[in-house]
Image (cartoon, rainbow, N blue to C red; front, side):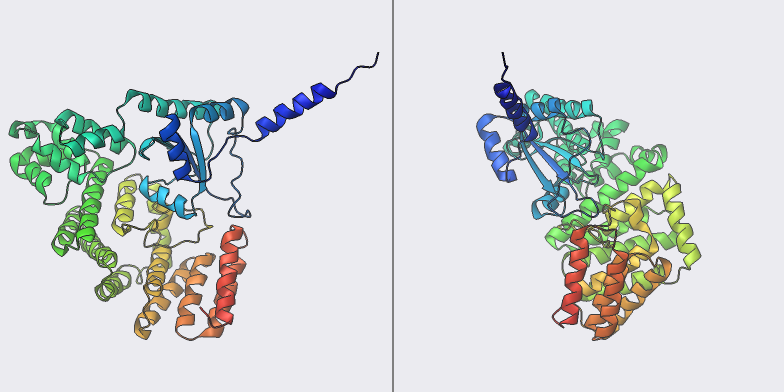
Length: 465
């Protein structure tokens, strides 16, 4: 008797096709959030980046993430959405949730507030379940960011709850807690400032420089306040200074408050102690970023010209290499590096003053951005993007870019910057020459970046840039 395997084959094909679909991703984040409001499932968001040589829309399979048990678990427990870091929605997520490692795995509640996040190039298969369960545990506890936010808005939050709220935000790399710090100190007694851990907690919250919480720390018990900066390790002190400076300057930019900006600059100077050169440099940089943030280009160009000429143009190639090596190797400079990146970050932007190609996989805010060449190139590109047509300023930017190329001649973004400045100076042939060099050096970058460089070259040749 001849046996027919047709039905069995069809069944197996059906199962394979069903599994082959993998995780079900919604078209937009709004769709995932709307679905979450209906079915009460948290939202999982995968934020990734294309690998070199792939198209922008290609989100490749991540190691172990396509295992059947993981696919089934995520489809059952979450409404899912995936996005590229370079997309508009992806860039907003990067900014809002301070993402620095990709792929990033975000877990959100129905209101779009973060429950948990982790960034890793590759997780073990079981870890995908572990991180998901952490998010589910937070969601089921009810004590989420959304919960504390509602308490705070309603004015019914206690000191202990506010402390938990700030701590949860810090655990999720959300350090803009200066306003919460002011609220917290309002709920404390004077005696509370005699407790070292309380004082340390408020400092870590990043209070506004010379604001309510900061002044209470300094003037209520100065001895206890000073002890924090004597006892804590350099990394903790660096984090405290970074948060105070960034929160103060961001608020100054938001409110266009030059006095507040000067307070942030003063704090930047103080953080360097007796290193007067770095103190002056930090203060100048802070004001430079402030003027850029409020679109005061006249003062920005003045500050930036002094900053880059005085602190980077007179550094020899050997000194620049030693400086970069020291940054990479010296663990103490880890906090200093973070301080520098905080100094240069402008609110509302996902990039720092330093500039790299989209396809160069160096996340803004990492130590690799701290070398002299990148800073000079970043300053030069700022002058271009801020729209100056002043020949003196453009020539200055050209000199910075040329110096960056002398220090590091294989970076395509430097030649791209040089080409754009040359074009604005009406040196069209030189612009095309440098843009071709950028394209040549970008051979290993993403296809998206290569196409962008080629598009810019076409505009230069057509005189339509």
